[in-house]
Length: 240
Image (cartoon, rainbow, N blue to C red; front, side, top):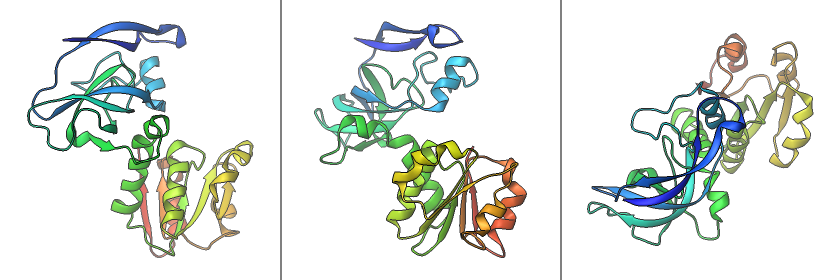
């Protein structure tokens, strides 16, 4: 067993339940990789877990948050083929990312691209992989599409617009507060719509008549309007 330092939640509540404790972690077995974590992302799920609304799934540390991380391979199990000690990696975990060491199956890890810092890498797996799956694998994103992204100022929203633009498609976003418009200026949206009284259709019509693909993290609140926004065709992908 190895000792490590970890951020833990000592109960449910506000930031006063956050502490740093010493924990033990076993050696990797099978296809497990033990990662020396250098940076970890912070997601809404981590905050909800601290407040008691998002329990860790079975098998994940119950009180150590962290769904995405980056660092280097410290040691590997006997069945690992993709990585070796010293490799720079990033990945997604069910929990436990905010610790000095973490165990992950090799399929849950990706090499950190050359020239990317560990801090940047730790902020990629959760939102970018989620957005990639929704846009490309489920939504069939192609060049020339008009894509409507709800909750444009969210982590998934800002990841999605970058993927849409990289695909030579057009990105339009909705948000519920005009106060977030300035924050979205660097993301090169083709149009931004501030929803009024829970409706975005009127604002959308100033930019496009219908969308080819809608990425929705808001859910049922926009269901009827999403159908209208798609017109006679298009694809709706919902998350959450």
